[in-house]
Length: 387
Image 1 (cartoon, one colour):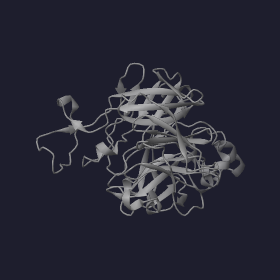
Image 2 (tube, rainbow, N blue to C red):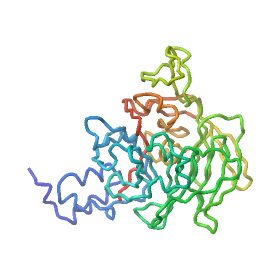
Image 3 (cartoon, helix red, strand yellow):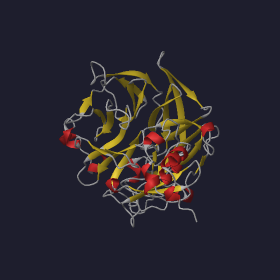
Image 4 (spheres, rainbow, N blue to C red):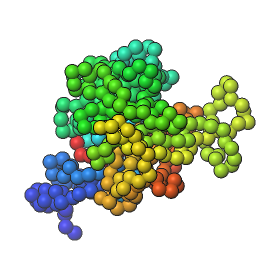
């Protein structure tokens, strides 16, 4: 039997440079030491578009590892990530933003290389004593990078933070978080995206603001658009093929069960004012998509995304071209369970409210057939990248 570990170095480099799937790249480096030696990001085409993987919840019997489910080919990759153990995770540009369960420490963590960047503690945010959340690991609700730390040191990280869901930012070298001022009467922030040199945020009532944290007035922002006030739900904002979109997710708030079809196999945590016999549930029912014209500041409802597929959740909201990835459906929204206000009411946590929404007919199908639940970190989308 041939000894594959003795293949010449130059030949191994030629082989790995022909790999297009990051799944193959990551597995290549696990074969033996000589193969691992050539598994560098310089030998892999990291500029190719990627479809996100589903990072599953931490498993009780193996808490140092995480499993990643690939929609592209259905495979599951297991990766040891001890620095993410017991922490809430969000994602941007392939990096995890982790928040400690007990102490609330925050860091950037690359899940496939283990590179970690320590960030200022949440208690360095402005007026922290008045803006704390009931548990420290829910303090950061979203985190979005302006650039990939693997490629540049000139980047900004913006987070939605605290009970009142403010925007704050951090640059490499900063010792604390800097608050971005909201326009007067601007409601709590629901999501944020980096697009065309600016950060855009959307509130829970569909108000869109823009801020330029690299300009002369980094802490200021102003309103550019307002969705119809009758729309209710959680909002996401994302860029796709040069256009800006806002998505409304309806039905994720906790509510009474109306009939047996709405029951979910979770244990509700009873509050002092709860009625013992009541059953509770939460489940996404619908999505509405609006395209924002930045020239006219007008919003247009659409049911046709063309070749686009959206990925929404605790990740930085993103879009891919479905035709580039077999198995990814165009004009669909792939979503994960991201409503803290709902799943924290259940002992098992979140992870059941996931699926693929067909924007054309309003139907929802599962994208992962297994069960993966957690109160701290339910499944999230992670774009696989080498570091």
